[in-house]
Length: 117
Image 1 (tube, one colour):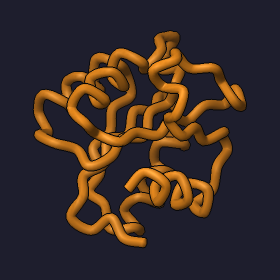
Image 2 (tube, one colour):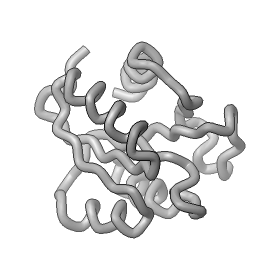
Image 3 (cartoon, helix red, strand yellow):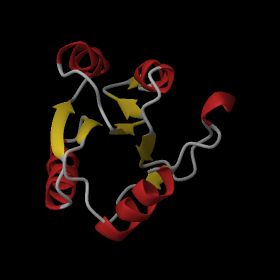
């Protein structure tokens, strides 16, 4: 699987996890834009143009990432949630959104991406 020519948004407040995810996505050929707060996530949506995919931590510095997810959904951008809380219950309009449980590995990430693209 390759993500060559695709730009992926990462919204993750744990730097170690963010950098590991960035490495996995870059290895798959993606260009990556990173944000560590909900506000930075919205700023990336305004500055970086379009995204092919997004991976969003559910809980980011005490705030839910759902508002960013809703904007991505409105734009038709596929997204994956990541959480340390296992099978978190999302709002009903995100019921079919893939969720990775931290810690996840490259194989799990690729499976989630392949299910979306």
